[in-house]
Length: 355
Image 1 (cartoon, one colour):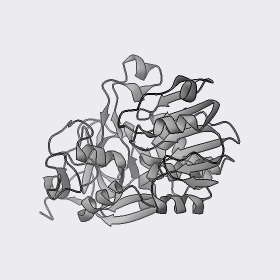
Image 2 (cartoon, helix red, strand yellow; image 1 turned 180 degrees about the horizontal axis):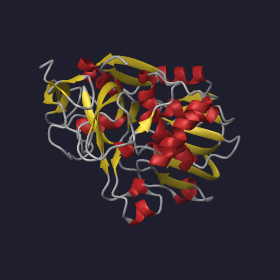
Image 3 (tube, helix red, strand yellow; image 1 turned 180 degrees about the vertical axis):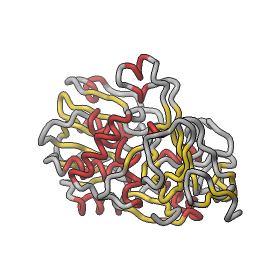
Image 4 (cartoon, helix red, strand yellow; image 1 turned 90 degrees about the vertical axis):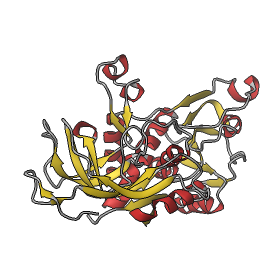
């Protein structure tokens, strides 16, 4: 990799012309003999109008990265670099930028851009924008040394969080928060969490610190132990019923078969929110067993920027502690394989540079 090229007029930091990055060669199983990913050299991107160039410090490893890598989600860009839980420092400005200063530490999330003019954007529901674009799906993401972002879609990182623990907040945390809001958990109520990875372990903390009783249902034995250590009232298998009826539940797994069991576990009037971007098919439901008594089944699609700002403020106030396992950038494929096994403690984070 070239180590020195030009010094931009925006900063005294030398920005190389090339960088190390991962790219998806051909979507497929991360556990196959022929990896869908390749660690390679790419040109450092140039920030366009309204964008800033960011030197990546850390990047969280999200389950959506696995869906993109394995082909559960359709290909939006050839030779894509995954990653959308990015923390880094601003090192260069594109034209017509004014929000950040050089050296500012910012966060880059999943939602990269919305049109601002459709009926959804104009009504405060930009997460439903049909023209929306996403980091690590439509545009190269953070499994790389540098990345660009439209400045209006980045976040300032609360000082409380270091760059490693901040990374999972930018998708696992924000999406978990939107799912929590969609689940309509009553004050002092009982919440079930199906699956207990990066997003669920943050939602559990948010809920418990607000006086909500949390019950975890997940396949991983280590994940169940971790849930109890965090303070969950119970932790059982993914297809088990909780020890009590639930006011609300969130399904973080990509498994539709769990839905009937989760609906069965709800009290009358309860809500089940599907938090994932991908799920296998939901089997046939029984009206009296699963839907009657005014039970609600809803889904979550991305998030609004307001969701992100609200969650980061709440996480700062409540002192939320993401549990992380660090990997170097060169071992991103190992982190994804670990994630695929579904029995992780918290979240995985790639360490790209110091900061």
